[in-house]
Amino acid sequence: MSARELVVLGTASQVPTRNRNHNGYLLRWDGEGVLFDPGEGTQRQMLRAGVSAHDITRICVTHFHGDHCLGLAGVIQRINLDAVPWPVDVYYPASGQRYFEHLRHASAFRERAELRPQPIDDSGELKAEGAPFTLDAVRLSHPVDSFGYRITEADRRSMLPERLRDLGIAGPAVGRLQREGRLELPGGRTVTVEEVSEVRRGKRFAFVMDTRLCEGVEALAEGADVLVVEATFLHRDAALAQEHGHLTARQAAETAAAAGVGTLVLTHFSQRYPDLTEHRVEAEAFHQGELHLAEDLMRIPLR
Image (cartoon, rainbow, N blue to C red; front, side, top):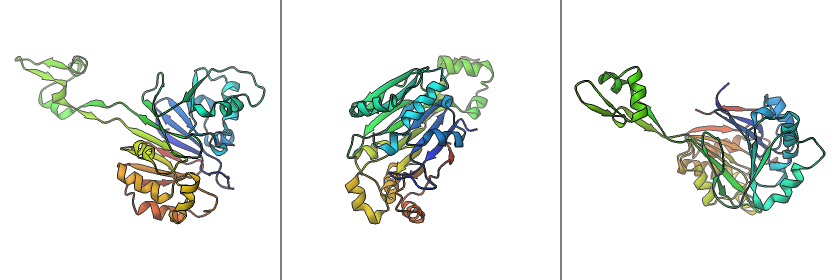
């Protein structure tokens, strides 16, 4: 199993279909499990996908339309039933506090786990204690308050074996150079860590659901290695997309291309399109990188 992968639990928009459950996406990231937008039926989809409550460390809700949150009640109760032993942070728009409370206490159950509500008032970095990344929320444009999420791994310095070899640096000396930042070689020469290494940019993952085109979409997509983004409509229905606060496949792909996105994952498809061939055609006309039209239970490795 990949240490980093996206497990797709559901890909429908407002109305589920025979083949598409309401939304749900689990991002595995080095021991973290971030569950995005658990729509109705998410708990059963988790079972089908081999995802357990113990895989979840954080939950991110973009907004409080039912296809993005009605599964929250069942997921929260499953986290308690299975007595998940660590605190689970739940991020959501602060304006939807009453909806969160309704879902959290939708029915009677025994609370055996710690749930930590993290309401979001505006764009910015979120509290993500213990995470191997930073987590940011960015405001989007939808009829109700909606936020996209961005995960950013810190840049890291990678040693260059050929330069170490040329300078005769090996074994424990490499670790000392990494810890101290410099190393004195026999003969008196001092080598700095910058001379024998390079900075490698940390990976970036962005999650964009219900929204019109706006600055927030562009900010979330910028330089993302993986962008998961709604493509509810085809571009011939762009007026409908604008009216209801959604994106077309073409808009999503154009944004990805302009932002330098590596892997583009389109999802949240309207029931009006039983065949997604045109979605692929629209997207491939603009995005030249890896492209996925998400299917329920699909697993996408993050490279």
